[in-house]
Image (cartoon, rainbow, N blue to C red; front, top):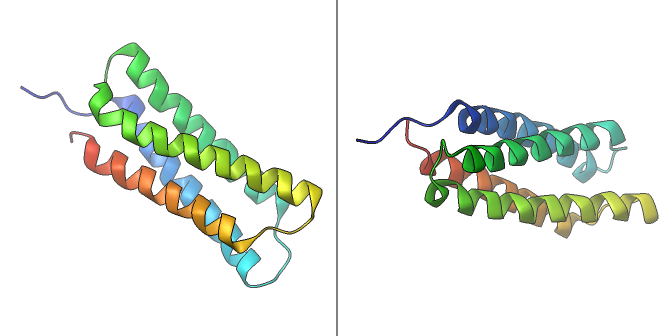
Length: 121
């Protein structure tokens, strides 16, 4: 008998979807060659980090099997590395390279896709 997904994992998924919406808004503004609101990027980064911590907590508590969560958590780690790179690039150069934005977005969408289809509803 398989148990349904834990509340931690479902909450993490909901936060990740919100973070992706905020990231898409920030990326759209950057790709349209307008000024990117710096706070929006930080807010969506913090939401993604909270979601990753909730996923890690769901593994440590034992409410989710690591088979379902580990691939999504690995992709989220790559996403966090890409987001941190973007943060330091904008602080240093003042502009975000579009290629790194697309890599960051692809890792984030892949993590949500993996989590969505890895959870048991």
